[in-house]
Image (cartoon, rainbow, N blue to C red; front, side):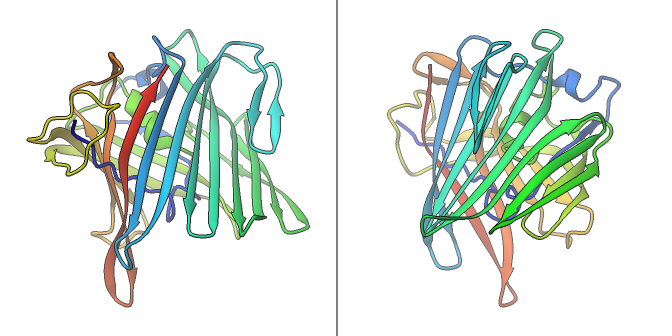
Length: 294
């Protein structure tokens, strides 16, 4: 069976971006979001990763898990107690001697119609030693976080008013936009918490076209990926200060993809995250290897 080539931006931008969406229509942005796990409790995506500059490779794994109200949730270096009903989206990227682990817990508010970020974390481990850790939470109109860098602990807070999505795994959450399709436009206010800064940035997501994505590999877990290619919505993620032409590109399947007999909505089929080195453009490419659910 056909393997979906999915390219997910993790190394360059996912490590530092948080997303607040403002839609172009009258519906509230989070009101456009539907629960991805309405008929199952867990999804896993495993991706092959390639840096096109030197063909170095890695592996990226994303897990989505549903939790009931008052559940206990393991979350990075801490445990969340008595959470609201929600979804934990957690990813792990292993590339060379470095491991990145990042996640966000989204509250499901007003039934399953809204998803709002509540908690965030990210860790970086090099050669088995943790070099950076961030634990964050959304309180009122602010994003508050503790950054652990070596033996130092830094407390920070930035304004995050309006509708806000967290940086960690927001690509998966965009799958749940109920008005997903060509013509979709979303503006982003972005909390950024890295080893060097805590601030905000402005991003924009635009979808104005579709493309057929073809693959060369196979996976037993994805049942209906066609050899002639998969029709995808093309979504560009751009930053206000970014040089024109360097947008991140995400490709979401137009039709539901069946895995183990269940339908998965707007599966992310490809992400291209460009970067420059020595005056030339290269890409980080994340390719879907397997998809499972339960």
